Amino acid sequence: MSDKSTPAGTSRRTVVGGMAGGMLAALATPAQAQQANAAAASGPAAAPAKQDPTKQYPQPPFKPQQQDWPGLASKMDPRPDHGENSYKGSGRLAGRKALITGGDSGMGRAAAIAFAREGADVAINYLPAEEPDAREVVQLIEAAGRKALPLPGDIREESFCHKLVEDAVAGLGGLDILVSNAARQHPQKDLADITTEAFDWTFKTNVYAMFWITKAALKHMDAGSSIIITSSVNAYDPDEALIDYAMTKACGQNFTKSLAKQVAKKGIRVNAVAPGPIWTPLQPSGGQFPEKLPQFGADSPMGRPGQPAELASIYVLLASQEDSYATGQVYGAVGGGGGP
Ligand code: NAD
Ligand code: MG
Figure 1 (cartoon, rainbow, N blue to C red):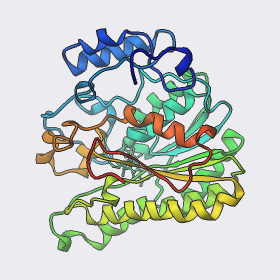
Figure 2: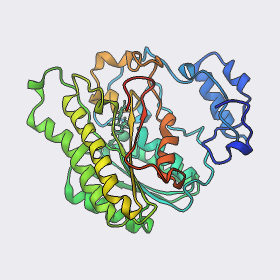
Figure 3: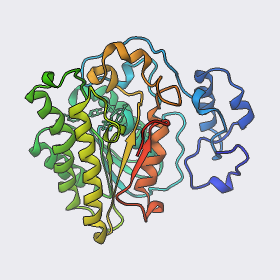
Figure 4: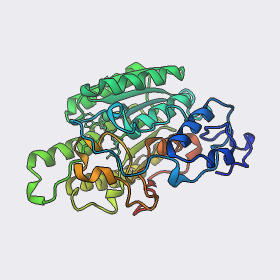
């Protein structure tokens, strides 16, 4: 977006206002640009300053780093940007009630922060081991003046998925937005090394839980509600080492398209987001071969991985009434690679 945009012209958009575009573009390093974004976030609403997106965020090589699954954003170096210091809302989801799986970190956390700053109350699901990340998200939602409902638990269990939706509905007083976003990704060089147990783990998390949670959520959703599935570039351009994961992400897109047709008559929209390489805890906690992590995102046309914050406005758009004619769509955020 141009630095010539007026605040009036952008009043209903995602904004990190404040600093003049020329000034921000002149900053030498991604870290400086991020600091500038943070400083801009405290200013009056205005368009994000114009700058070179290839230099906007950290670039490879990254320090080698590994964590036990499921990993914490707070232990990553550099820490992912989920929009904590930059996302500014403008009431686009005022009064809505949202449930986000994997809401503690990565894309789910970026969506949770953005939804709260757009006026929504937000329930987040995550694994008990992710409590430190979840605590930060709860504080950020509450700091936005909204209700935060932390609902830890393992979505590989059907009974928990039902309880999760019931607890979210009871705690929030309804449900208008579901973001089915949690996933498991684990590479194997050879198909022979994907055990039945591992295949089951990936499908339970990425496909069965999406099905169970969406089915339970739909009972509580009325016209104007929105379901968002996090898919992946792997649905179109599957990595040779991510066969089981890529299959599940293709399932997510197919689910999005068929369900969208089925529930359109009820006025409920269903869309998907298909990210490319994004800097999240999924990658250093078993989602990526450790030796590949330092060059993560380098082969993207952007030359770097995306940050969760860069996808926040996509989730807001798909959730909001402004996107009322979009259903059955897949929004790619791949940095120029093989998107939808
Ligand atoms: P992330 O690690 O921050 O989020 C994934 C979340 O899944 C975790 O935070 C965890 O809470 C949740 N989860 C995993 N197993 C669970 C279980 N059994 N029970 C409950 N919760 C569980 O990573 P992310 O990259 O933000 O992932 C979010 C979504 O983005 C996923 O669907 C992933 O497939 C998708 N995606 C990521 C990338 C990428 O490069 N990071 C690219 C394309 C798509
Ligand atoms: Mg997490």
